Image 1 (cartoon, rainbow, N blue to C red):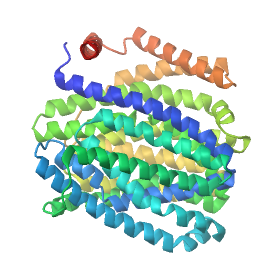
Image 2 (tube, one colour; image 1 turned 45 degrees about the horizontal axis):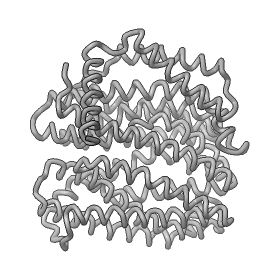
Image 3 (cartoon, one colour; image 1 turned 180 degrees about the vertical axis):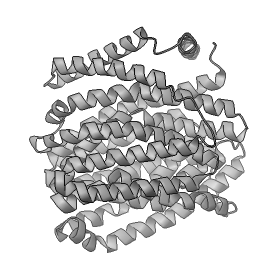
Image 4 (cartoon, rainbow, N blue to C red; image 1 turned 90 degrees about the vertical axis):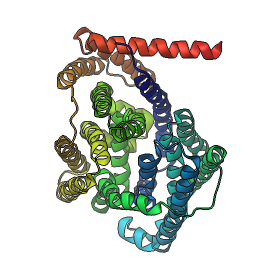
Length: 495
């Protein structure tokens, strides 16, 4: 079958973002050894706790407005409406971000004493408190490009963020400023990104003083979703607090490094979810349910095509990767990687199914499911961490993600179903098993051998997937048409 224009556009946007995320993944890999080699496990643990705290508070400062403008403005062509709504929401975020930044600054001493067990760490919290305001603004300004599917700009800015951070962090650590320097480096990076984003947005839509004409609709949609984001945070990162409380900040740092490595299995989810939510919102608003189902089907199938081998590969390569990327202090984090990587599969399922719940406006279900998962996660962390250490935190995370993913699937199918491609998933797991066994036989220890084993493993995986007919003829024809169309476009541009 020939690829339709809508599918080609969707695929092209996903393609841009896959490349972007691959670059970001590489940059994050670079940032990890820079931080772990430049900071002790204890200081890295302090940064981990501060960072996850900022993530939580930013979710309240944003009031889910970054998703609200995608929901309400994705199909809008009226520049006056776009300008009015954008700056009205921006003003609200400016006020809430400032309020929460000041609040964290004022309560930094209490926070340091309770969670970090040492008031001397309060200085780091005071400096980092401004990141709540800056992260809120940065996230919101980036959502503008996502809303109007300006994926070239979105991709460029998304790559620039970690690149700027790495450059500034290296400078700070070279000058021996340690964690203080790292925090200041990220503050400077955020300011530069906000300035770039704002300049581009003003060029596109201009500026006007907000009149808050439609702000009630945005708040009515976004505020009820805010607890959902906070509760999801409990499932994602609250385990760092509990690990720190029972085992110390150094253990929290070690656990966080292993957690990050396992969560790299989700590298494809970011670009895909960035594109698919505006797309299915548009089709659903137009009443085109067939296109919604089709986008969800192929998104999930090709998401699993990439996530499943990542789960197997990261589980095998956890120890050599940590030995290569970090110091010996962080290598014990290898034990949590398989649990987190498997949990990533359920997280993918959740992410696609929650988009269905959002577009059909049944957001109450999301709150119920996330609350159940968060309660289970906290209870399991409190029980398991004193008993089996950081493995208990990883197991609690896996169970929490399984609850989130499976319950969201069950609820979303009451309103809109899509094909889960279960036979394909079985074939992908079979091919990934053979790939993982070959990587285990290679047993890479150096960075070059790790890279070589990844390349060999990827080639073997896709060769096996094709040989056992993981793709049908129609899908192969679609991708052939997609590639030809994009090559033709590139040729015309060069001409």
